[in-house]
Length: 287
Image (tube, rainbow, N blue to C red; front, top):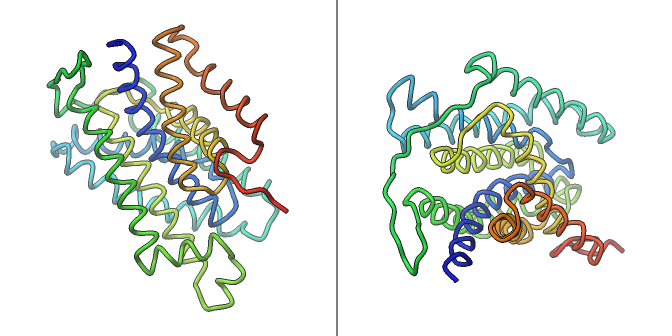
């Protein structure tokens, strides 16, 4: 039972990270109907910014996290303006190729600046607490609590603020939103800013736990797409649930079977679920 509870805790921690990253990705897809293939690399860049601010300028962890989130929000707006907006009326293949170019530039730019080797951010909360036989580090608890707080704040922003409701209106009907005077380009820019900022927050939260590297964004980006598909394209609740499901599957599969194949279990479950429900868990049937 202790092993089971420990793996559940680990799965919730990993799933919290996945949920935050996938949430930003599904917001962008809901607005532009274009998958942002550079999303994982924005996550990676956020982690490196946090590392740079802490090591180069001696900033504290939380100050570095805040600066990284703000800088990445501006970077998200820049990516939307330069990579996606000029191609919004072109075939989706054009946006796909442009995104591939962006992620290559981001990854190689990090290699040139910081080198190809892995880096580690000092853990600001190295202590642990034990409860019911579960060993929980403060940093892992911080990831879970912060993820829940970010999800709640984002839901409040979308449902209760004018900017959030505007984003939701564009996601539901882009043409209709334009007809009533909503600046769709501005909404797209804000959405990319939120997406990149949440990715940076997730990266900074888990960077003290895992090594960071220039290639970390590629695999996480692929998992984020799997989560968005699992939950249903464009579904915010689906992205959240999909993130936690994938994290739990990885943790339980790695704990009880083999950690070397933890990704196989998660993607295998994705194939099984989509075979039963092609639209994902929360996706809507297209008539």
